[in-house]
Length: 118
Length: 112
Image 1: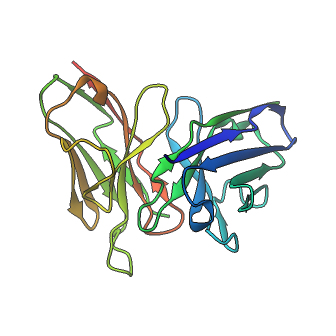
Image 2 (image 1 turned 30 degrees about the horizontal axis):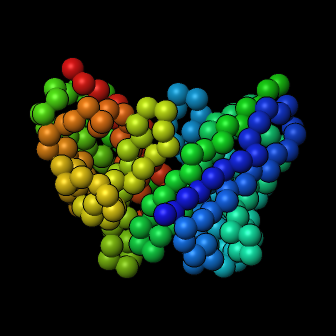
């Protein structure tokens, strides 16, 4: 079955960097696009970034543009989110989610918590 | 950017009774390809979000048929025909017609 497992979260200070990973299994990874979506404590869902199946196109929310980079390694079935210049407001659970054909965000991981302190 | 507005934000419901959540978008969600990329997600307490409905009215794999979606253009509705205890949680509408994808604020479904 489809499985997405995030890792790499933790506690960091403002201005520092962190790299999240999302390991995929149970389907043909290279055929799908993927999103990162975050959820601040007690808040709603916020879309962060997307990368398409071939890795050639990525798009970002304005709030992270220039600081975050989404990438993928199809040989390792893994999605990444490099987060630089972290801010307190980046504190959230970060989820990876699969982008199906015409069915967006059809499968989600369990999330990884990023906590940024000043 | 498209703004998604859900009502109500909180919905106390009696077990076995129906429930309805509305979602309105600030612009039409009809894509140039003719489809409308409006989805509904469920987030049970302490869990990740889960896709329930895609393209307005299509139930995703494994979703009980008591969940249904309807609507067109800018106005959409999620209905639960008979609420069960496992339906407690947050419900989000989401649009993926136009970048960036955006979510409603969430509706908290709780049992009376």
